[in-house]
Structures are given as structure tokens and as C-alpha cells.
Image 1 (cartoon, one colour):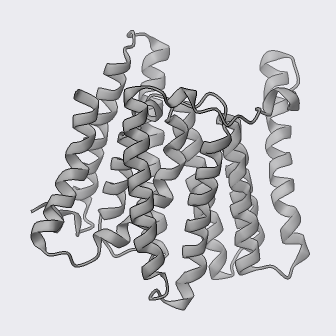
Image 2 (cartoon, rainbow, N blue to C red; image 1 turned 90 degrees about the vertical axis):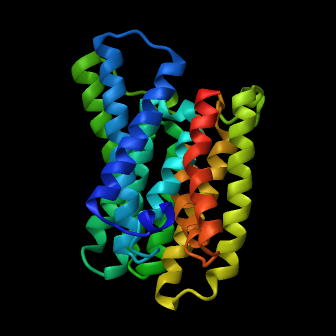
Length: 306
């Protein structure tokens, strides 16, 4: 039974989920079409490594901070939400950016324990800065760092300066890199991307399908999450508010990025997977639970193969 399998958190669960990820990832690359050469293989395996590490980071965030029960429901949902966006699976830069955003979120949530506050803030800021090098508009998640400071350690004014310092460090290191290898400065005007509200990039069959499924999941999972929010323990509510904020920022980024093609929606996957786990953890009865899991497992195959 799938529901009983994913209700456990054992090494075999992660291995099977990783194999499932790899199959869908390989199908996405195959459908896109690529030639076998060194650079393509490097992007293929590098992208999958970033993808797999993001899955493990999502699981670490949920389990360490008690955002969900001890299970593999969240990572299964994460894989589902990313594989209905095949254009994101073939974009190694976006996968790398998403990995660093999730790692930055992990550091922000670590602020709760009250230890190494400044180092966690700096670490989160550096992660967001690196993520923005891979994909500029992921810099919007720096707002999560400031929200973390607001929720956990707002009184020390030095904490509010650290995120700016973190971004400056990334910019300076980027300049050192470009000077060393390209003999030029990392020009800030070339780094910043314009804002565009155009949705022409979604006007194809696959794009409409991806947006439709993701929109339904977002509205459905988010509504249930808000209904259940007041029943959550008080100590976990700052975490939950940060997850909700991460989702809203991801949606805002999707709305303003230029050259939209659904790949940018990958930032929605992590917070929505955590939010959606609330639905999977509800008692629906065995039959309905099985249907839910089969739909989440088979829908990406139907989309990628047909």
C-alpha cells in the first residue's frame, strides 16, 4: 500500500524516491532532446545532484523543525510538484538556485534555537546571494531572512545589517571570479534583470497544463493549511508563517520574471510540498489515501510521456 509506504521515513524510502526522481528527470531531458557531449553530461548530472540535494534539504527542514510527521510524504509531494514542471528539470541553473534558497531557508529556521544567531543570518544571506547568481530573481527570498530576524531576534540592530553584508560578500567574490577568469568586473547593471508581467511564455499545451495543476494544488493545499493553522502548536507558528511567506514570495517572483516558461515555478515546490503534507496527513480513509498517492505518482508520467 502506497500510503503506508510513504508514511515511514526509512533509508529505503529515500532510495526509491530518488530512483523515481531520476527516471522522471531523465525522461524530461530525453523529451527536450540533447546531444551526448561533455558539457551536456555535466549539466545533466550536476542538475540532478542539485535536484536530489534539494529533496534531502526539504526533508531535513520538515523533520528537524517538526513541520510534518516523520514520513516521506513531503518529499513525495516535492517530487510531484517539480516533475509537473519539466522545463525546470532541464534548467540546471534554476535547480542550483532553488537548492541554495532551500538551504538559506534552513538557516533562517535555525534562528529559533537562539544559538549562533549572527552566523545563521550570514549563512542564509550568502545562500540567497549565491542563488541569485544562478537565477537573479531568487534574490527576492532575502525577505525571508529579514522576516526570520523579525520573528526570532529583532532587538539587536546588528542583525538587520548582516543580510546586506552577506549580499555584498557574494558580489565581491563574484567580482574576484570574473576578474580572475574573464578579466572584467561583475557589472551590477548586467546582473539585475527587468520586470515583466507578460504571460506569453505560458501559451503552449504543456505550460497550460502545468499552471492548471499547480494552481489547483496551491489553492487546495493552502486553504486546508489555513484552516488547520490555528490548531498547530504555538511554538511552531513562526515557522509556519515563514513557510507561507516563502510560498507568497515564490508566487510574486513567478509573476514578475521575464522570459516565463514555467521553469521559474520550481521555487513554489518546496513551501507548497510542506503545506500540502497537512492534507496528506489528514485521515481520509485508506481508499482515498491510496487514490491520492497514485495520482501524485502517475500524473507526472502521463504528462511527460503523452
